[in-house]
Amino acid sequence: MKAGGARLAGEAREALRRRFLGLGFDTARFARADGAGAAARRLREWLAAGCHADMHWLERNADRRASADAVVSGARTVVVFGVSYG
Image (cartoon, rainbow, N blue to C red; front, side, top):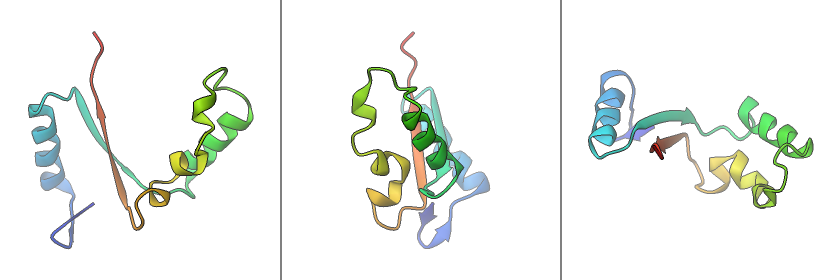
Protein backbone atom coordinates (compact mmCIF):
# COMPACT_ATOMS: atom_id res chain seq x y z
CA MET A 1 0.00 0.00 0.00
CA LYS A 2 1.39 3.38 -0.89
CA ALA A 3 1.14 6.66 0.94
CA GLY A 4 2.96 9.52 -0.71
CA GLY A 5 5.09 7.10 -2.70
CA ALA A 6 6.42 5.18 0.31
CA ARG A 7 5.28 1.69 1.26
CA LEU A 8 2.92 1.77 4.22
CA ALA A 9 4.14 -0.74 6.77
CA GLY A 10 4.86 -1.19 10.44
CA GLU A 11 3.62 1.59 12.72
CA ALA A 12 2.04 3.57 9.87
CA ARG A 13 -0.03 0.54 8.88
CA GLU A 14 -1.03 -0.10 12.49
CA ALA A 15 -2.03 3.55 12.92
CA LEU A 16 -4.27 3.22 9.88
CA ARG A 17 -5.75 0.01 11.30
CA ARG A 18 -6.49 1.77 14.61
CA ARG A 19 -8.18 4.57 12.68
CA PHE A 20 -10.44 2.07 10.89
CA LEU A 21 -11.29 0.38 14.19
CA GLY A 22 -12.07 3.81 15.65
CA LEU A 23 -14.52 4.36 12.80
CA GLY A 24 -16.50 1.34 14.03
CA PHE A 25 -15.11 -1.63 12.11
CA ASP A 26 -14.52 -4.75 14.21
CA THR A 27 -11.48 -5.73 12.15
CA ALA A 28 -9.33 -4.30 9.40
CA ARG A 29 -6.79 -6.43 7.55
CA PHE A 30 -4.37 -5.87 4.69
CA ALA A 31 -3.62 -8.37 1.93
CA ARG A 32 -1.53 -8.38 -1.22
CA ALA A 33 -3.53 -7.78 -4.39
CA ASP A 34 -1.98 -10.70 -6.25
CA GLY A 35 -4.34 -12.40 -8.70
CA ALA A 36 -1.74 -14.98 -9.63
CA GLY A 37 -1.15 -16.00 -6.03
CA ALA A 38 -2.26 -18.94 -3.94
CA ALA A 39 -5.49 -17.28 -2.73
CA ALA A 40 -6.67 -16.66 -6.30
CA ARG A 41 -5.81 -20.24 -7.25
CA ARG A 42 -7.73 -21.57 -4.23
CA LEU A 43 -10.77 -19.47 -5.14
CA ARG A 44 -10.78 -20.86 -8.67
CA GLU A 45 -10.37 -24.44 -7.39
CA TRP A 46 -13.11 -23.90 -4.79
CA LEU A 47 -15.51 -22.63 -7.46
CA ALA A 48 -14.59 -25.45 -9.88
CA ALA A 49 -15.32 -28.00 -7.15
CA GLY A 50 -18.79 -26.50 -6.67
CA CYS A 51 -18.17 -25.58 -3.04
CA HIS A 52 -20.20 -22.41 -3.48
CA ALA A 53 -23.40 -24.54 -3.67
CA ASP A 54 -26.31 -22.35 -4.82
CA MET A 55 -24.40 -19.09 -4.45
CA HIS A 56 -23.96 -18.85 -8.23
CA TRP A 57 -23.32 -15.12 -8.01
CA LEU A 58 -19.81 -16.02 -6.78
CA GLU A 59 -19.05 -17.41 -10.24
CA ARG A 60 -19.89 -14.12 -11.93
CA ASN A 61 -16.76 -12.08 -12.48
CA ALA A 62 -14.59 -14.76 -10.89
CA ASP A 63 -11.47 -13.19 -12.41
CA ARG A 64 -12.32 -9.88 -10.74
CA ARG A 65 -12.89 -11.63 -7.42
CA ALA A 66 -9.53 -13.37 -7.74
CA SER A 67 -7.50 -10.28 -8.62
CA ALA A 68 -7.93 -6.71 -7.39
CA ASP A 69 -5.71 -5.64 -10.28
CA ALA A 70 -8.54 -6.66 -12.63
CA VAL A 71 -10.74 -4.09 -10.86
CA VAL A 72 -8.19 -1.34 -10.15
CA SER A 73 -5.20 -1.42 -12.46
CA GLY A 74 -1.96 -1.38 -10.51
CA ALA A 75 -3.58 -2.35 -7.19
CA ARG A 76 -1.01 -3.71 -4.77
CA THR A 77 -2.93 -3.98 -1.50
CA VAL A 78 -6.50 -4.81 -0.55
CA VAL A 79 -7.94 -3.51 2.70
CA VAL A 80 -10.61 -5.82 4.13
CA PHE A 81 -13.03 -4.62 6.78
CA GLY A 82 -15.28 -6.71 9.01
CA VAL A 83 -18.30 -5.92 11.12
CA SER A 84 -19.86 -8.46 13.47
CA TYR A 85 -23.52 -9.21 12.95
CA GLY A 86 -23.78 -10.00 16.66
